Length: 512
Image (cartoon, rainbow, N blue to C red; front, top):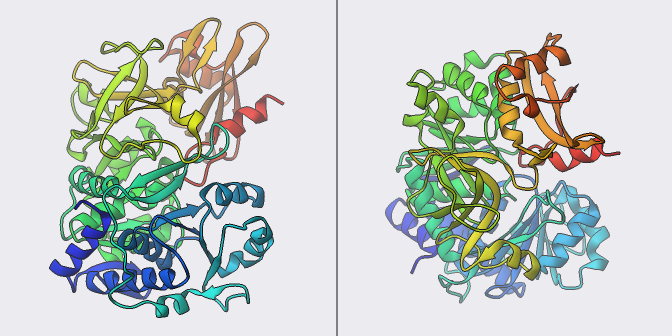
């Protein structure tokens, strides 16, 4: 058997007294974690949940969130997390699409869930985390108390679904991405390998748990019997404090989080010597930011590339992230490394033909973790999945040593005056200016060029950088047709909850 449940059982057997999860004052061993998962799974069974039924959760980061993941893993349920930041109509769409039998929510969302209840006839039971539950919901601890240490009379199978994640919805409504038990098992194994985990690994988790980024590295830590330290939300000083006090060995940050940590006042007061690896992923990290981070925090960075539909795809390991290396090594700081060994990949042109090194094309991949189909969305499945290969929508290019560079999203590429312009290339050129903090490049309608390159820039504090100076800087690094025709300076860029730039909203702002 290859299931996520096997990982929990193995850790309880081999490392019963080793810490599995830490959240505030709560510290739970692997043995206690398995028992808690089984009790919760048993309680949910008593409420009517059965194998492959969905259970959804609307909550901020909390230990109960991970407990619900574990209950699904040991019992063959399917957990369908919901982004708590969604507006009521958006949340209703996700809940109707996933059709949970049981809906778990934090007490702070009771009014919102109460408002949605009449529109959710499939939900038979509601469970409340935290303060006193409303009359129409059971308390979380009361449900745990219904179960036993043996768990429910259910045994998950390799082919069972276990997670149902919803994508960010940057190209329309969110799409449900179902993961099978064997995919979770494979992801745990590969994450542990590429992230260099061992039994002493202590992962700090601060990104949202409703997203794959909140679960993937926890799976990897679990593979080795390691420990996950969970934070309620991201705060740069809280993160630094936790690294120092909990002797964290690994954490994951998107570029915006890393920028906030580097800019945090008082950062020097914290002992970060326990850190062995910081993974940056979710979106390409600007090379100047990566070089600054290495200078301040040391050679602990690994650049990783993946997506919800596949899991991990490619990795630039920390020993290859060298800001003082050869010209080739410096150039590769902008790559996402080599494709991981368990992933098959191709770079293909618009006709589906394989691209040669140096020729941009769409990244197409397959692995044991690749989704079979989107949930309730055959049209999107047909568009994205062919013969087991998943088309990522990312435009990539290989160098002669097959390092993978991501140059744009397929739908974000700008065609200006008949020339293809890749946003990432322009963003990298702009980011090299010392007074630029963040940048996003988009295409905007233009009477002459059809689309024109526009940059939206956040300046570093106290900077007076102007448009003409920054465009002149770009002309020293990229071809003239790639340079921005206009630049707006803003206080901050719009972002999705995952930390990715929200380019659809940015484009909408400039198309009005």
